[in-house]
Length: 225
Length: 125
Image (tube, rainbow over all chains, first blue to last red; front, side):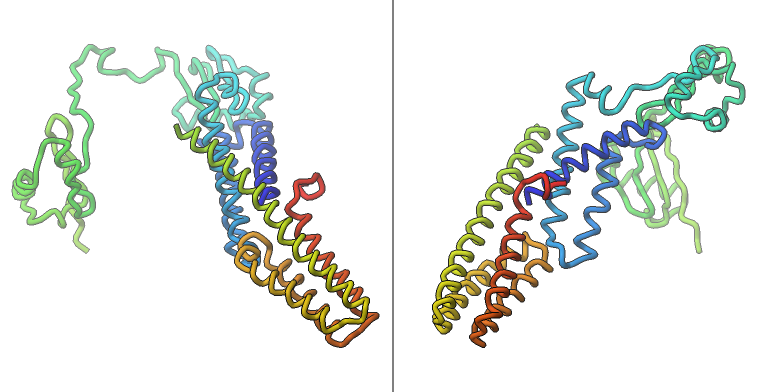
């Protein structure tokens, strides 16, 4: 048991270090320690299941140990900025004021093709129109265009933009979500009235129904197959 | 709060690991003590008494069945159990030349199980 415990901690630290050295590009939307835990747990859980000669304890102890390490690392990194930088790295600015930072590109082993692909994916065809492109610690590239290149907003045009508020789902695939219905100040009677207006007999005929804070209803009926 | 629970759980696992080592040490130590007695009796030619002594060691091993199956790899348990019965057979046949190697094999298996749990560079790495 002690061996399993120590081995798990060693493997966790080694994987964390390896992934940290590999850099952000290998991650893709999960933080480093989350990736390490996910990669390890999947394998650890599989072994005692595949080989009944291995005691379940040999699978459970490492999983519990990893869970503890992950919670501790996450908690400590919340408290210490230095540790957070050490474990997860810092965002890298690949484009600053329209200029590609080649040193940062090399440091992150980010090729020009990949950069262009990411820019295109975010609607920026010309790097000179990008004010900043930031490679985040979870591997995502965030692109900020120059204000002159950014899409026009209602506030720029001084147009009134009605805010309907957050829409809550009240019927999902025929099931009434009573908690959400109550949260938006409605009840089943109101729901039935809304259905009657649309010539629907019951919520089972509804695929999706949402209500926003302004009381606007979106309803999609179920397709008849 | 969550971090404290995780830390407590990690410490609990560490304590559990230490208790496990101590328990295994005692179990193997007790069995080895009985086996030493078995060896002395067999050397004196008292095979019947040596068999009784070995039966006690086997009972001790089998009584710990629940523990061993939870914490020790099952192939290790099987090879140790086999070694017990090989020694039993050698003593039952009063095989003065064969039983020392069977005893040595059994002691090796028991020692190996005990060693596996001890925290040493060789077992960790």
